Image (tube, rainbow, N blue to C red; front, side, top):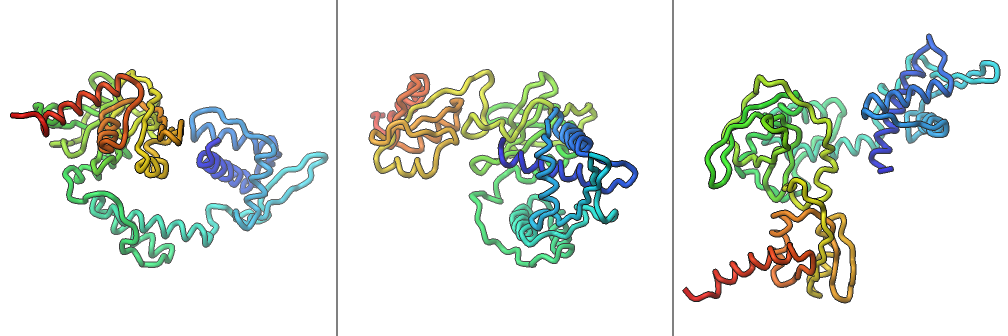
Length: 337
């Protein structure tokens, strides 16, 4: 299991156990604790997730430890069985102070969030509240840089779109594609993503139900719609972009094994900074690597950026596509006019 998902599951289980241990009107035996954890996970993630006896025992040990919440959990004999509760009925893991490690992570989060002050005016007050409430260091000047341009068009739409997504509101959008006339859409917004210094909204088109990708710098206007919001029930955006480079996902197009041959001086760069998480070394001596992605225009642009340091060996369709573009580039620079 992914360690991030496992950590999320543990936090959900600990919250469920916390409710059980605080309840003095019901005796919670190990079977009841397992059931409570499974119900909490199903309610949160929308699918049945089994929990073992060992997992619950490990969770209780963690809650009692210094690394956890230092909870005092009683194990009270009831015949041949035992039920569990807090020794202090007023104790709750929700009331425990932050550990030094958690305070450090919160400080780091505040520093990261401060980068978005210009896009979210209300964040200034939020950061001040966090610093005051948790007595954080007021040091918030920039200590880390990002490859982004705060002056690019479209940033003014981040905050309203962010709110529409959180409030689960459909929107009416006027959009101006490059070299095309304006269009009006009713959209159900789900996700905002940055790529290559541009921001993109992913939303469901009310007309045909497709997921559309709209660049924020091409938006003319956005306003609330009276249409009923269609929630996202079928796309996990944390995995949605796993098979592509960039943000363009061609419909009904499978991922392909793409073989690339790099020059000897460019190969170390590519190995230290992989093109994609699927990248594998096929032949180090020949400089051949493989990625498994859906071909799109961002992939083509990325490969063209390497110039003569890369050759597409396969598939033939991608090789031919780049060959056509290179021939057009050649005509611009070398053909007589």
